[in-house]
Amino acid sequence: MAKLFITEADGKSREFALDKERVTIGRHPDNDIAFNDKAVSGRHAVIITILRDSFLEDLNSTNGTQVNGKPVAKHPLADGDVIAIGRNTLKYRSAAPGAEDDFEKTMILRPAQVGAAFGAPSDPATQAAHGAQTPPAHKPWSGRLRVTSGPNAGKTLELTKALTTLGRPGVQVAAITRRADGYYIVSVGGSAGNRPKVNGAEIDASARRLAPGDTIELAGTKMTFELAS
Image (cartoon, rainbow, N blue to C red):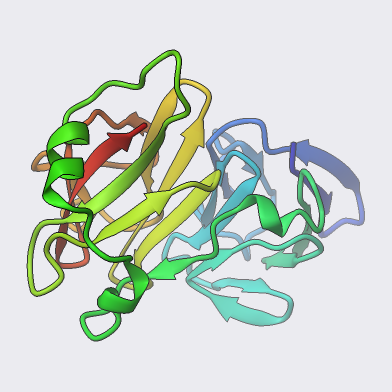
């Protein structure tokens, strides 16, 4: 699993394993990582980890959060990144440095580019055959998203990698992970009232398992989750 190598303002060092999906950082003692440093806000930042991928989000802190010397609001962490929070540093080490091929490259959906992000629509027979299936035990299966709104309706994105991120930074971002028992979706950052939705209900940083036929609303685009064998 990924780890943080922490050096506190007083020079003390420690390791912290990112062994859960949401890790909070701040001055209040009930944070997962608490710093006794007045330069750190009570609720300063959060790290969301999905499988081997981690995302850092600043929680509108007073003094901000930096990664490799640059201020960030939301940032996908890479192996070796150095996070500065107040007078403290946290060096991120990924679970498998250099294993980027295991992950889907970030897919950003923009009105003018969504067509290029998705492949050609499947034929009607394929849609009818696979639109509401559960995963068959005797055949390989994979998930996909089918766009159901706008000019790109009918086009699909195959979810063949361990992690697929979708959305527009600063607007809405979600991550879909492929696990042994199915596909799960979480919101990456975002505040209540402005998060992606599944079947009309907002999602958050807690992983929600997707079922065939679920409708996802993200960054102005509606998609349906399907399973294909």
